[in-house]
Length: 416
Image 1 (cartoon, rainbow, N blue to C red):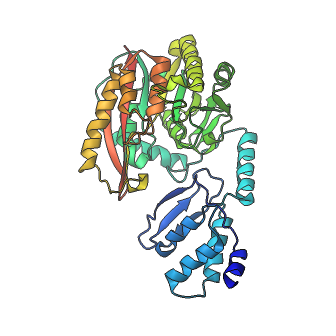
Image 2 (cartoon, rainbow, N blue to C red):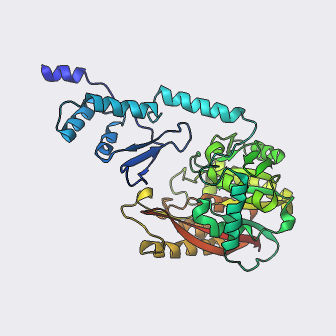
Image 3 (tube, one colour):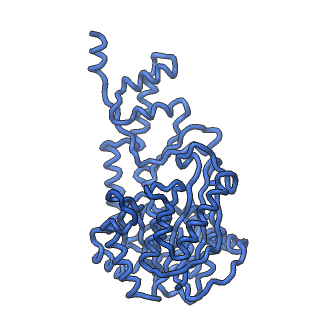
C-alpha cells in the first residue's frame, strides 16, 4: 500500500532541451559540464558540478521527481535531498533550458525582436572579437602583418573560402584568403555563403536586413534576396532567425569591411546541412528543396556574372571530446595528422572538379566521420557557380579546447 501511495505522488520531470550546447567546463577551478544556449534565447551559462551531471539524464520527459530523488539519495548518502533537488530543477528552469512555457516565451520574444529589427546587429562583437573599432582594426592589422605572404592567384578570381572559427585560432587562414581579394572588387556584391549550424536541414536562410558590425554597416542586396525567395520559395526560410546568432556570415562581413570599408554590398545566405530524404539517395540535389535553390542560385550567378564575388565561411573537421569522440585530440598530433591528410584529399577532389567524388568522400551514409561543417556550403557554391577551379592557399588546425580540434583552410577559386 505504501509503495502505491509513493507511485501516485510521483511528478514527471520536464524535458531538457536537445538544442543546447554541452561541453566540459573550460574553467579549471570550476570543473563540470558547461551548458549554454547557442540560439541566444537565454543568456545564462551554467556549470553543473561533476556529481550532479548524472542527474541530467532524468530530465528526459519520462522520468519522475522520485527517480531523481533516488539518485540524489544514493549519491549523497542522505535522505535530506529535497532542497538540492529543487535547486537543480529551478536553476535549469529559470535558465530556459527546459522544453516548457518559459522557454517558449523566451523563444517567441527573441524571434519577434529579430523580425522587427531594421538591422542585423553584431552578435559576437565583444566576445569573439573586439567591440571597439580601433581595437578591432589594430588586431586585424597585426594578424595580416604577421601572416606569411602567399603567392598570387590566377585571374579572374571568382571567390574565396575562409574559416569561420574564431579569429584567434584561424587568423593565418583569414589573412591568406582575404589578402588575395583585389582592390578593384570593392564595388561588387559579395555573396556570403555561411554554414548554418542551427538551421533546418536542406533549407537556406535569407534576410533583407543590413549587417551592422563595429566597423560600420554593410548593405544587403535586397533585390537579389527577393529574386532567390521568388524562384525558390519552398527552399527558403525568409528572415531566418539563425542569421541573428550565426557567426559564419558575421565574421566574413567583418573581414570584408576591414578589406574594403564599411559600406560593402552583401548577399548573406545560410546553408543548412544536407541530409538524405529518401532511401538510396546519393547527391544533395535529389532533395527537391536543395535542387530548387541550387537552380535559383545558378540563375542568379549566370545573370549577375562578374558583378558577384563569392565568399564562403566554412570550417572542416571537428575532432575530440567536445564533438562526441571518445578520445582527446591535439593539433597535428596522432589522429590529427591522419585528419589533415583526409581533409586535403577531399579538398583536392573538389578543387579538381570531381564534385560527385567529393560528396562520396563524405560517406555513403551521409554520416561524416570527420564532421565537416562546410561541406554543404562548398557543394552549393560548386554546383551554382561551376565550373571553377581552386587553389588551397593554406591549411591549419586549432585546439579549440584542450581535448578538441577544428581544422580549416583558405581557398581561392577562379574560372576553369
